[in-house]
Picture 1 (cartoon, rainbow, N blue to C red):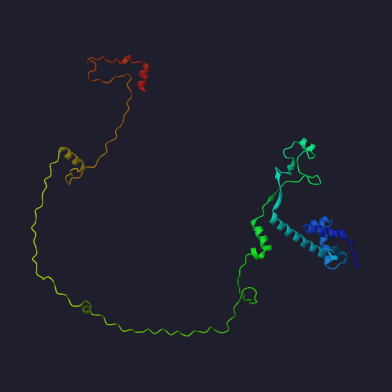
Picture 2: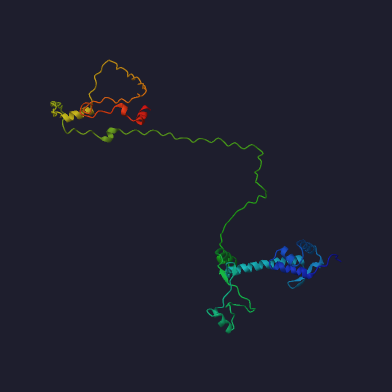
Length: 324
């Protein structure tokens, strides 16, 4: 007799149904109002052979809870595979949204009608398409499956036609060792190879050289007689002299700029330049009475020009400026 809390069959079946739908263990446990720790306790007791965890599942009356959970996970895997195959064949249906709002299908039979015309003829005033329950149908768009997914599906469905094959012969020597392979330790010193015999070179005798006279043959007779010729002495020709025209005055002037006449060489030493003394400026006090300088020339006094005004007639303001 097994002691412990009362286990409800409905709770176990609720967990198994959640696993079939693709829920994880935590979500399936919450759907049956039990914690995840309780789920793992149920699984441990079922694996130990507790008879309280036998449930009817898949046409059988006495199936342990942990076996039913494993079967539910396999069923969910088959559902995922079938969904993937359907996606590869027909694509993916996605709802259409605009500015975050779901769009609905329009009843094509009432396109262009007014709301009163739709209502009078028994259609909905908004012109949207509805199912048998009166619910609006969302607008969907079909997404094309990827080429890689389609090729993978064809390789799985028709492997003889679409699966790439390659014939490879690989030879593997199983040394039954783990890690790096080690060689055997030598027990004796390595054998010293015998000294190789050097090759014997064949001594060849030199061939007799051919005589050059035999190759060229007899010397031919000279065609012309050799006679001593007297050297020909050529008379020296006088060099032709060309008279140059005399230079003009302009040419002589230009030549003087181009080629200055060299100075005659003398032993005299030129005296060094002596700097001139610095002039000292002595400022004298201005006179109290303005005295104009003496003038010479045709405009001097007594030569037809008007005499200068006397010093006493100068204005005091101008006299003060001159004293500064």
